[in-house]
Length: 105
Image (cartoon, rainbow, N blue to C red; front, side, top):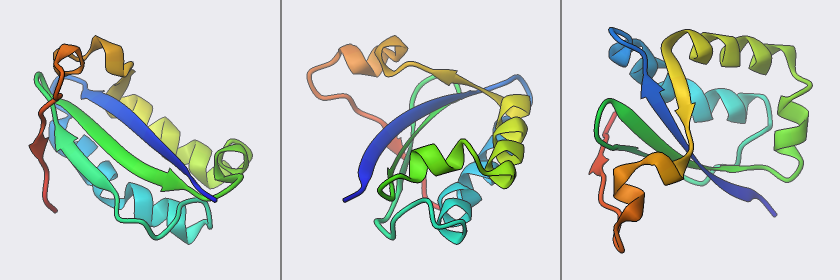
């Protein structure tokens, strides 16, 4: 059984397009490494250049990702273009029905 996760990324100034490029290949990259399931991921845009991604890790995938040097390099690339944002800090999260704009690739 997999594990659904929701993560928010705030693009650093001038890095919005680079972040979107990383996000486009994020789950396919994880799948190639046997870490994410085939469940279709969702990508949404919140306010202020924040993107919210929903995807499913394979069972044990999170732990294996922390040991995979390729994943570590990918996460280093993310660190260059964005900051992670706790969901509770998103204004949308305070609403009964949090609304986001869909992002289509």
